[in-house]
Structures are given as structure tokens and as C-alpha cells.
Amino acid sequence: MTLCHLLARQARLAPERVAILHGDAPWASHGEWAARSAGLAQRLRAEGLVPGDRVLLFMRNHPRYLELLWGAWWAGLVVVPVNAKLHPAEVAWIVADAGARWGFVTRDVAPAPIDGLERQVDAESAEADALLAPAPDWRAVPIAERQPDDLAWLFYTSGTTGRPKGVMITQRNLMTMGLAYFSDVDAIDGARDLMCYAAPMSHGCGLYAVPHLMGGARHVVPASGGVDPDELFALGRALGPLSTFAAPTIVKRLVDHAQARGLGHADCAAAFKTIVYGGAPMYVADMQRALAVMGPRFVQIYGQGETPMTATALARHHIADTTHPRHVERLGSVGVAQTPVQLRVVGEDGRELPAGEAGEVLVRGDSVMAGYWRNPEASAAALRDGWLWTGDVGCLDEDGFLTLKDRSKDLVISGGSNVYPREVEEVLLTAPGVAEVACVGAPDAEWGEVVVAFVVTQPGHALDPAALDAHCLARIARFKRPKRYVLVQALPKNHYGKVLKTELRARLRD
Image (tube, rainbow, N blue to C red; front, side):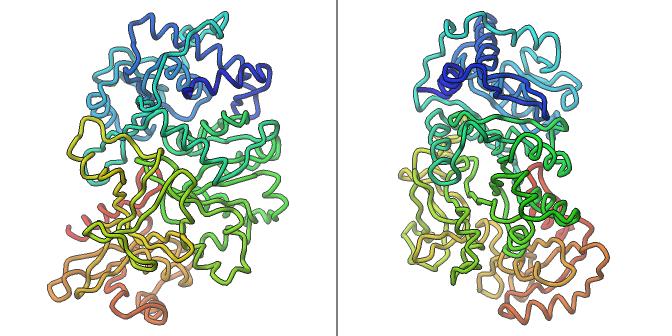
């Protein structure tokens, strides 16, 4: 059983059912999707590509993304999905490192040839039309024999601290992730549900095509190819409530939209079934506001590229249960271990820590990567005795809820005491007039390091550093409070909405 058998299964079960939409317009049924992907696989093989070869996808969100993805898998190839916002020089480096032979692009993100590719195909061209012409009988096109531990998806990390590493994701990893969605995230009703791709399909949002194909749901790519709250609410009302994956920044945009237009819980329920969020910290105050505005349609997941979308989940009922005595505490967590994985929190010596003590988060299970592409040193550092050392600092409570403190590299040690920037950020976000905040450590001759807070002001407000300091002193220990507040127009973020704290540290050094 491979990922490609999922498509063949649905094409047999419901060949005429609409499977892919572009905006509100049908693009392909399950049968048409299978015929196009099978046709592509035939032609890729005829061009000399063999199982295990790498194929680059450097495209904006597009309905052909799904056809290309499954066509490559049908041929036994490995996909290398690349965020559409990367610079061509960054993409060329990935091509060289991955040894990618072919690349499928859209001209808006790749107007010129990418160095290193044998062949570059514009996904909207006549050339692509010919490659994706339906196989006359897709059932007669053999699916390449692949084993569970064969590579399927080569994902390059965002590279905020240097060159990105290629995360080797196998057939087994993605099948495990897909099944975990049903057990730990959400049920899927194939007759009604839609997976909406507004966030980049090259990342977590695209991965959720796997469980939604398993469940026979529809897949919709917004006509804009991105996040337009007006468009998404309209699509949900027209087609049926959407499910989607969103970074916290996208959730905030949806909540702002609903609030600005006075939409109630019923209006939001008509547009959205489930919003799964993750990929960056979701602060308690932001989720409380999201619940108040949009109602109980949120699920949080925690994972990494190295264990895609699968480490912990904070279920809808945990998020919505405001009567629980530890609701706020749980809202600040990332939930409990998903069904197919184990979690541990350990000290520097690798020994498991008791509940409540912070240490590095370890994950073990069938979702964990095979290693880093052609990087045995990094693989050995991350994978030890079957456990993935995530680099994230967190603590488990007695009930198994994991609360992340920070990345280990973001920990600030001031005067010999540990300060977790996220704890300070949570407090500052409750201060009037604060829209966003990020805290980092800065070298200090007396304390070793001190906390510096970069703060974005809400429109129409004025912030006073002295008032922010008083706000912190009233809520956290004196040694944790920032020693300096820097008011900024915006925080630097990568293509997935994560704040680039390395850039903030560089600003301080400069």
C-alpha cells in the first residue's frame, strides 16, 4: 500500500465525484485526477525518470499541484516541494543538494530557468497539458512498487540558522500522519467535507491532502491561490464549511475579518468546519479571542518537518471547554501525544524529567523522519536511540499535556536563571495596545544576558515602555521582565509566518 493507492482507491469508489475545485469551479473528479496522474507517470517514465529520482515543485497554490504530486508518486518519484516565496538562488541550492532532475513551476514564481534542472515545465503551459493528458485506462497503468520506508517527500527546512536541511519523509511517515488525522484531529465526511489550500501547499497545508484523500473529501484551491478572508468565507458559504490548516497569523486574519463584519458563531460555522492551527506559537489571549469571535472550530497540532504534523494535538473539545478548571493552562499547551507517537521530556543527560520540569522534547513513532538527506552528522544528532530530539523546550503535566516553552536556542539565561521568552510574550500580549511581540536575549556585561522585547503597536494606540514594564512586574518575576522595549512597525517573519528571532538578535548586535 502506497500513497498512490489512496487515489486509485477513491477513483474506483467514486470516479464521478468532484474531487478538486479551483475556486467554486470543478477542476477534476476522482476518476479524472487518477487518469491525469497516471498519464503523467507514464510519460515521466518514458522520459527516463526512474523510481527514487527527485522532482521539484516550485509553484503557487494551484489545482495541478495535486495532480503533479500524485503523478510523481505513481511513477515512484520523490517530490521536493519548495515554498513559492523563496529566491531563485535558494531554489537552485535546493535543486543541487537534492539532485532534482525535473521541476514543475508556475511562471509567476519562476519566470526564468532554475539552475541545475534537466527540464523545467510551466504547470500552466501546453507542455504540461500534454504531460497530464489522461491515460486512456488509468487502471492499466502500473503503480511503481515502493516500500513503506522508501522516500516520498523531501522537505527542506526553512533555514533560519544556516543552510536548510533536507528532511527525508517516507511513505510510512505520510501514511501514519494521514491516519493520525482521523484519530487525533478530526473526522472526515467524504460526502460533505472540503480541504481548502490557502496556506502554502509546499508545507503542512499540502500534507493534509493525504488524510482528506483517504476520507474521500473534496479539495479546493482558492482562485487567488492564497489567504483572502473575504474569498475564504464566501467559498465556505458556497461549497460547504471548509477545513484548512493555518499558521496563527492566518487565524488572526480570519478572526479580524469576522469581527470587523460582525459575523456570529453561526456565520462562521457556515463557512468553516475545522481550522487546524500550528507551525508557530498561538498565544492564549489570541485563542481566547478566536473562540469568542468564531466559536469552537479550532484544533491545534504540534509537529515539525521531521515528524510532519504529528506529535501532539489539542482537541476541539479541550479548546472549547471553558469550564474546565485548567482551561487556560491547557489552552497554553499544545495538547497530548497523538496516537502513533510517544513523547518524553528530558534533561541534558537524556534522563526523563518529572512532570512540570522543562527540558528538551523527544518524539518517537512511525511519523518520525528517516533522517536528513546526505547529512549523516545532522541525522545522528537529531535521531538517537529511535527518538527525535526536537530542539524544543517544554514540560509535561500530570495529564500528559505538553506546554512548549521555546526553542532551546531561544532560551535566555539571565543572572544564572532561565527565562523562556514565550512566557514573557504571553504576558505582554495582554497589555493594552500590544498587537505582536517577540522577545530575545541580548548580551549583558553584568547579567550575561537580558531580555529585550520587540513590540508592535495596535493601530490607534500609543505604547509607553514604562507602562509595559509595570504590566510585566505585576504578572511575572522581576528577573524575567524585559530590560529594554523596542517599538517596531512589524516583526520579521519567514515564508510560513514564524518570527525570525535570528534577525532580531542581529539587529541588536548591529
